[in-house]
Length: 367
Image (cartoon, rainbow, N blue to C red; front, top):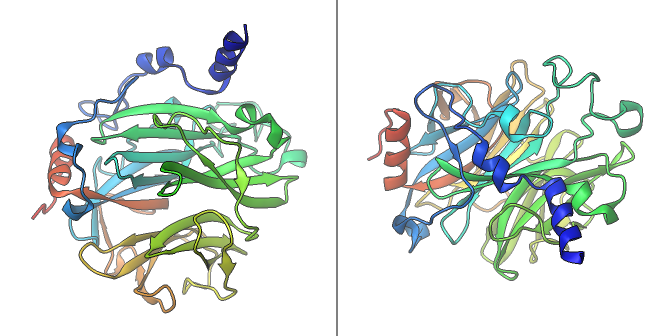
């Protein structure tokens, strides 16, 4: 009986294999799209995954207009070409409880897989006909959004994906009556030897902090009760490991700040200075390295800009930063899309870059 009850509880907050099997391809066009599968087959090409083979870049982002997510690729880390000509690849209506996804983050782990996490939220759900109220629950109590699920997806080839829409509050009732959970990101914890998912949880329409939990191997659920990362008083965290030090860029007061620790999920020491060079509100920092160099790029969402855009700064030491402008207003360029929001960059091998551009029929200089 106990096993039966446990199984029923899991069904309440994890997308079941039966539902996944019925999920159609999700293309932006009629001939190509991602495929939701029950189980992944690890291809021979990634059996011996080595970061030394990485030679390209993968950007994920979303747009307010569609509440869906997109992918773009680059061979040089400067010019990113959209894989579907600015049309969604991850359809929020098919992936999320609220029929919308936001804040996509993608990373690679030592197993060579791509791990994609997103916020389950449609901020225009009433206008789109998905609900009868502006928000899922009363705004006067729970505030903006009041979303509680995160979308977890895993792939080896960026075409075949497993999918789970995970309700954080139902999985961990010990967390109490949370307002929201959002902006999930994933990093491999070499001590725990697991993928750590860290994200923002808000209480009482005011107290928002970052929490962490460990995911199962299939990346369909969180296995440990989320715990608060050292109280940074911020949101939208992004962790980068450099040597023995973990660098966290995060958001407080609509600006990007920086903190360091020798541990992945606690004891962060914060700085007070604003890291990004903007005068307008910013959020969603994400750091990626220029392959083959010791230069890191800090990307962030200038959501206060009109129109909004992504901004970029470069650093080698996480102390001094050089402003390199915005997309299409400096050295960073886009092809086939504009006005991306809350994005993240990961890496591809040259073979993967060629395979995914061939699949989507996109011309990119793959060296």
